Image (tube, rainbow, N blue to C red; front, side):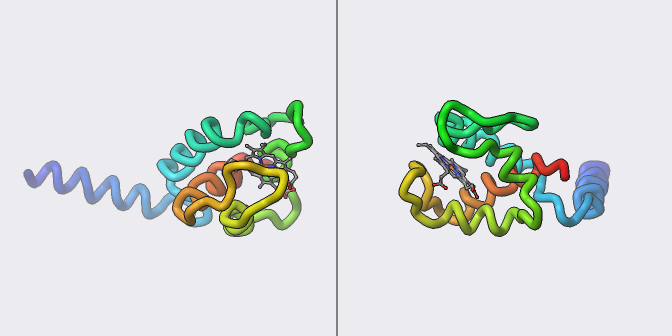
Length: 107
Ligand code: HEC
């Protein structure tokens, strides 16, 4: 019992000391799963990916835009867009997908 509690404390401390600007790995993973299911028909969602067969920009290029933030991407995904299906998402989903896109950022 005591040893388990100690392990938990170590885990919590390890998570807390991870880079604060990065979203929790689990949110990124959940976002990646949703993006694969709901976005990959039109967007190239893979790290380092280029354009796809539609006019939809790759997630890599969205992530690398100057000044891009997860918050801005999430806000975008919570609104409706004419050319894009499966937007207008609830905030927790938009946040998770945005965390995934932002995690691709290289620049
Ligand atoms: C039916 C095809 C389609 C699907 C499905 C789709 N998109 Fe798009 N998306 C587009 C097109 C086309 C554009 C570019 C034109 C526009 O902005 O409407 C776009 C633009 C975007 C942009 C804005 C890029 C910019 O220029 O700032 C983001 C962010 C985005 N999509 C994210 C997503 C996410 C996340 C999903 C899945 C939840 C998704 N899209 C699903 C077609 C799609």
